[in-house]
Picture 1 (cartoon, helix red, strand yellow):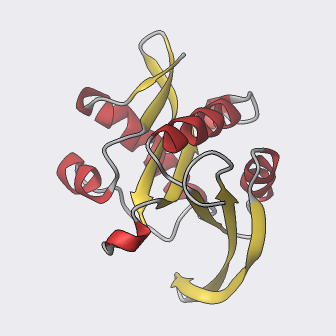
Picture 2 (picture 1 turned 90 degrees about the horizontal axis):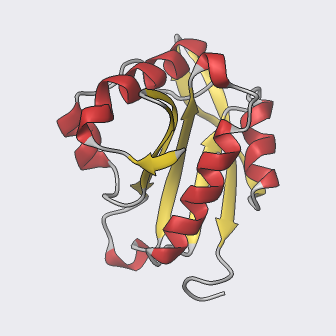
Length: 162
């Protein structure tokens, strides 16, 4: 079941985030922040979790791409799935719902940055209507190694200017 993320979900959400960080294929981040920092860095709506009973199996949220008002309708996507639930449709369910809820919130462009070797994430985004815009070469370093990032975007057909 997809539900709104609550502050009380943070420990499970953070644990899934840490698992993603540990793969070295999900983010440049090397640690997960506390709730206050994460909360400040993400849009208030939508924030989603995928629940099976009391267990959170994945989460999705949006971050603003800029503090400038002209970019209020543009957000960066984060989708993380617990290791034991990958490949079971959790990510697709979260991303599909995130897209629907973002459009209801007036967001017209979603973007995602994905490491090239994370083919499952790239394919998920493309299946959900994203297109590959390009590759940002040597965008940042992890453990002294330059990493490229595939830039994907999805333009809404219902929110904003098309």
